[in-house]
Image (cartoon, rainbow, N blue to C red; front, top):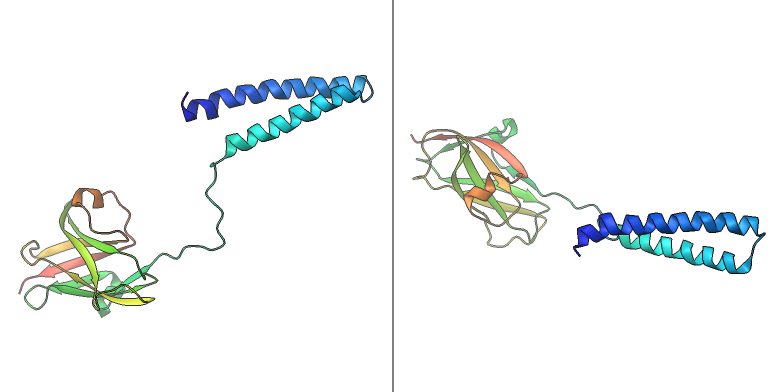
Length: 183
């Protein structure tokens, strides 16, 4: 029997039967003025109902936590990034520098999206080689051969680099418009 069938079909049917027996026993205890044998059966059935409800709700909620997870902040270190637009001249540099806060020991990747497809993707690498501090300077190295002049979307993800087809479906932690020039 599958877990879903047991949890959503069989268990509620059993609980309904036990609840009906509990109601009948409650009425019989009242009618018989607290008969000890009926009272013991009523308490056993009540305990069984509580135990089965605990089994049915096991794993229904996420584990309790005493803190909220902090989403890493990624900000590109250019004055133009305040508007959400990053200008990149491939003749001068194919590197974008950014700052990551709260990203210690995490991995990041990027994707350049153009016309609904991933044009370029790769790792967001820390400049010093390790993501080991609360605020880290990182570099996004673009492939000059993959990008032509135009406007793209730069998405930054909190995952290790992966196949481009998966990056289209993922939610980025930060998105910028990327204006690429080659002059």
